[in-house]
Structures are given as C-alpha cells and as structure tokens.
Length: 562
Image (cartoon, rainbow, N blue to C red; front, side, top):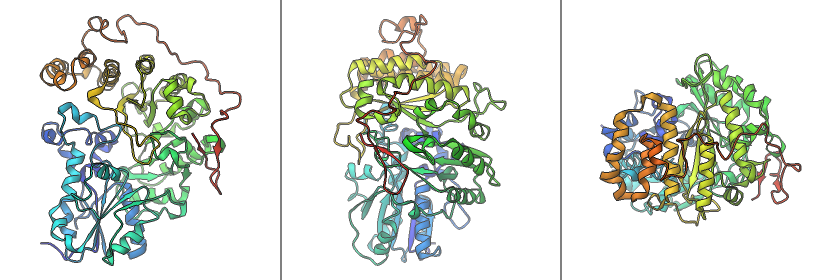
C-alpha cells in the first residue's frame, strides 16, 4: 500500500550503495561489468543491501548523507526519507514535493570504468548505468511527476548532461560540484513548487558549512579532507586547495557510523598525506598518526580503510609509513605476500598516470612536488619499495591516450611497468576521459578501438601482473584457454589484430613465443631501464620557479598553479 509519502525523498541506487564484503574494489567493478550478463557473473549481491524495518536504507553513499544532514538541520527528520530504488514507492506519494537522487558514476564513463564493458560489445550498458536508470525511471516518479521536482547531484552528475539525458529522465536540476552551499535553498524552492534552475554549479564550501552526518554511510565513510591543489589538468579536485575536516567532527562522524553497525571506517580523501598539511605540502605525520589512533579507539571500530594518496610524500619522508603501522594492524585485508603476523596489508589508490617526463611535465607536474618530472619514474619505484616494505600494497592507475601521447611516451611507461614487475600492488590501466570542470575538458577522449599495439601491450601486461599477484597459482586453466577463444570469436572483430599478442600474454602464453611481437621481453630476465635509487634527491630550490605556491586567504592550505 502506498503511503501519502514524505515531502522529501533521497535515494541512491543499490549498486552505488553496496558494501558487499567491505570491498570498494567489488563496488567499482559494477561500473565495468555488463548488466545483460550480470546473472552469469555472480553479481546478484549488487542489488541486495540492508533495509531497516520501515523500508529506509541502512547505508548510502556519503554525499547523500551530507545532503540528508543539511536538510534535517533545516526541516527536521520527520518529512525526510532516504531509501534504495525498490523502496521508493513506500515513500514517494501525494505529499512528496522533491526527490533527490545521488549520481556517483551513473553511466560508467569515468577514467577507470568507461572501457571495460566495451570488451563485451560496442553498445553494452554496465550494471551501474542499468541500476541508475532503474532508479530515475521508477514508476513512482512517473506517477507523481506532476507535483514533485527531481534534483540529481553527485560527482557523476556531469555524465547525464554529457549524454543529453536530462530531458529524457525529466530531471529538473543537475547539481555539479559540492552541494553544501546550494542544497537547502534548492529544496526550499522545490517544496514551494517554484521553478528550479536547470543547472547549478557550485564551489567548494567553507569548512563550517560541511555538516556532521546523522546516519551511516556505505563502507562507514568518513571524510578527512577535501580538495588537493596539485593542479593535474585532467582532474577537477586537483584544482581546488586542500582543506582538512576538524578532528572532533571526524570522530563525531565515526561514532555515528559505529553506532549504526559499521565496524570498518573508510577515510575518504583526495590525498591522505595532505591531512592537516604543513607548508609546501609537508605531511603532518603526528596529525595523521593521531587521526588513525583516535578513530581506532572509538568503540565498535575494528578496521581502517583508505582511499587516495600520492607517491611523492612517501619518498620525501621515507620513515613516515613505518610510523603509521596502525593502518596495517587495523586493515581488513589479508594477502599471502604480506610480512605482517596476520598477513594484513593496507591499500590506497595512487595515480601514477604516465612515466613519460614530457607528458608528466605537460599535464601533472604538481603531482611530483617537490621532485621534477624527470624524476617521476624514480619516485614511483622508490615509493613502491617503501610502501611494500611496510605492507602497503597500493592500487595504481595509469592513463593511456593522454592528449598528444606518442609511441615513445608509451614505451617509457612500458619500461617503468617492467621495472615494477615484482611489486606488491594492483595496477589499473585507464583511458583518458575529458572530465567536466578540468583544464582538458575540451580534449577528445581516448577510445579503446584506437589503441596502438604498444598501448594494448601496456593494458594487458597490467592485468597479467594483477592476475599473477592476486590469484597466483589459482589462475584457472579455463581462463587461459578462454583467451584465444575470445580473440578469434570476438576480440579481433572488435579491436583488430593488434590486440592478439598482448592478449595472449594475459593468457599466460609462453613468453618465448611472444617476444618477437611485443616490446617487453620477459623471457630472458633483462635488466629494467629504471631502478629504485637509494634516495631520490630533492632539487636544491625545492620547487621550480614556474610552480608558484598560492596561499588561500586565511588558511595554510596550498595549491599549485600550473
């Protein structure tokens, strides 16, 4: 039976709310796997989240909890409900005036996810896209459309505009950016039945506008910083100065998570090492250690998990990772290669993006600060050595198809990849996507169908590394046998013959049969072009004259103008 409805309903798709096995990795896969084959891929868990007895969502993405808190602080809790797609009909009714939908990666077209569904065919909808579409086209929205407004926000809202789907889905307003400055006024206007702006762009809010949350987020997410300031041209967050959430607010949010059943806390940041940063991106190690210890001391918290970090701070302060041992001790993850007594390891996402000094200097030179672009391969290798020594196994990304990438650029990245062959890590090859609100927004996307033979070699060598490290001897002979079957039945039809030998490396074909066809030769144990040095020297002046440090007004936070 449909109730009269709540005035304000907030919803998130099941796939973007899932915390199955506490794995961010598994949730990310839902933006890469084709929905039409989901039942054969064993992803039924993606639409089976916990629901409270009254139908409300037990956990949703953190951004939606932020909006919920703002609205509760303004209107009180009684007229607000937060739910998943299957429960929308319980809360959307005659009294409903506004529905807010969360869009993290609604169409699966970001760097890390856009390419993978294509392996199943040119027109394949990933699970995330199918689940978002199921939410935005829900019959309850159509039934009550005459008396409610639909507002969509989140880091992936731009995808809807890019694909010209706003009218198709009858979305009144798309919010681009962080919503603290505009959420309350938008929802107030919607409650009054007023016309809403079609598009709203927001700036990063001041710290005092970021509210404490009222209920549990997926993965027990707690923000510790916002922004970055390193200036990478393909990233919008990198263009905003970093700021740190006050420790007391972080701990209040942790207590909320633990009180509602989260035993793992995910610390969300664009760069872990910018938390309470000092001048010129100096890592505040005592503050980080205090943060970890304070969170771990909250009753009910058993595990800590991390999101993003950068490599340069690890190399700059090589003792730092050892001082953060609690991050490994409290990790949920275990691996046979760990030297920890319980085989635990900690991970974080690290953007490596390219080994080419030319591309690095052109698009992301702030990422290496205080090192030069020419030192980046050494920074990566030394940083990986330090992280692995302390049982941190990072998840690293490389971007194929950056604007102007040449074969020589790709070869340099392959050389670095070869030097990392024995590392403890996961490496995710991605394709360049011109994200909105970045300096490269007008550039053309890289396309899977246009990859060169060298780029294909890079792509599949990455996944060969991942298979061998994470699966080891458990790699199935059926998988290896399936590689040539895929190539001859579908792969060469979709991508041409350039995919053949790189793909066969993924299938563990003998390297002696592949060496004549590929750039990297794994058959003779050749010495790598790059090696981790004893130390990576910091340039004498610590930063180049063309990288001025900009000081945000009233703050010690910094950003690189590039």
